[in-house]
Amino acid sequence: MKKLFLSLFVFVSVSSNAQVSAGITAGFSSTDIGNMDLATTKRLSSVNGGLLLDYQFPASGLHLQSGIIYSPMGFGKSDITAVDNTGKNLGNIESHRISYIQVPAYLTYGSLSINFALRGGIGPFIGFKTSDKLIVTGGEHFGNGTALPGNTTALKNIVAGAGLHLSANFYHYQIAFEFQQTFTGLYENKVSSAQKWNTNSFGIKLGYFFRTVHEGF
Image 1 (cartoon, rainbow, N blue to C red):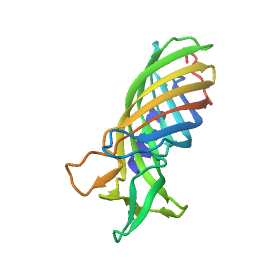
Image 2: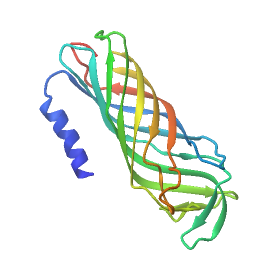
Image 3: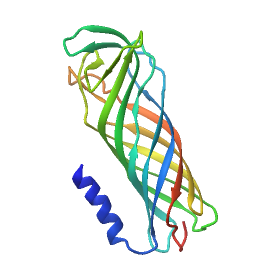
């Protein structure tokens, strides 16, 4: 984690011209488990937010947007059974919210106008787990990996995936729509050949950049 923050600091420091912008963001996302056999889940709604970094390549509409974002993942009401560390059946999972600090790296392209610019692009992201809250039917709460879906052994500390980023930019402001898909899954399965617990999410974010790019947003 220390290396991650150091890398982001160096990224800003070495780009000392007006082509780098830093800002803040906050938004809403909806996530769910995809492609799980014999399981029914509902989408989980969460708020997210954090710091933004945007680098515009010189004299072009090409940008690299990154940041450090608090971004939960998981799923809502389900027919998936939860068990504790002893294997005791706790009942069906009402929701499992897993908190991550996420670092995206979206390569986007858009117009050079500073008044209004539409941008779109794709890129990878990586997330580092910080905590989790699992609620079973009846309202009992569990955290820190003390309760998990049956046939899993642990939460993964790191997840990775890819995302689609679309945004509208007005001077200091940004409205972004994002879709993300994980590739690594949220849990460690007891059987390595079992299907991965991958999630998909979509959401909207509002951003504000403290410094604009004079050559274009």
